[in-house]
Amino acid sequence: MSNAFNNINNMRTFIYIKQIWLLSIAFALVACNSEQKLPVLPPDSAVLILGDSLSYGTGATKGEDYPTLLAQNTGWRIVNAGVPGDTTAQGLARLPNLLLEHQPSLLIVELGGNDFLKKVPIAQTENNLKAIIEQAKHNQIMTLLIAIPDYQPAKAAFGGLSDHALYEKLSKETETPLIEEIFSEVLSNNALKADYVHPNAVGYQQVETKLRASLIDLGLFKE
Image (cartoon, rainbow, N blue to C red; front, side, top):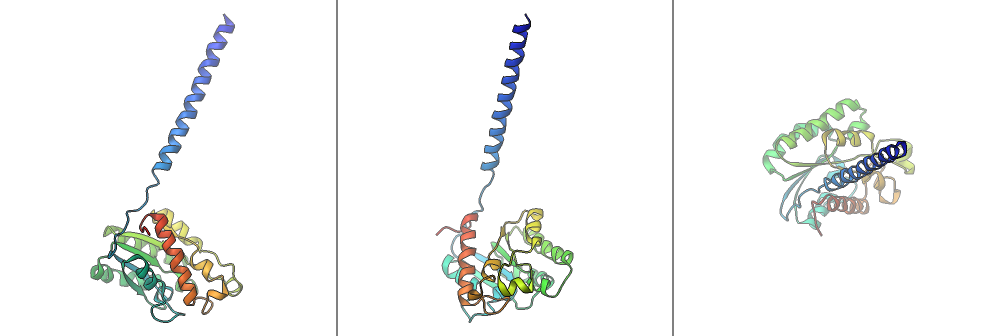
């Protein structure tokens, strides 16, 4: 009798373990399927790039900036709202009029570098970027965040820059897609720089190529 009882218990344990195993697989499949991409933006869609000198194209001649190159390669109507020297606070102040005037389907935010150079408190920079993202989402505008390198003079001079940790944190907190390691990679290569904080023409080509690849991965653009 005891052997039969033990066998029944062993069978129940086996069935229980198998059920747990099957459930774990099911949850994993659901998680994989939930990673949906963003909708494709058709040609002639309005895209606003809110940025500073990195978007303006400082370090190259007119027409060599990455927003112009991106417009040529996607067919989107890209508004280059890059202003040299702009901080996140200044970008935030400009945003309402830009959204009203251009009514973009997509907002790409490239800001923060001047905050780091001017030693603006990180909490203030974070709050400004959050406000920019919240304002866009309130207007039902898809938003992307471009990570900017953590400014360190030695790494800027000799390579090895990496994205500031603020951007990954902000991306997770606001559920905003993050475009990573674009400017960090380009500005770590002296052959791609006009100076220690700006790409040259070839560098901006690399920025556009990497950005477009990220947009394809996100589903926003199909070649």
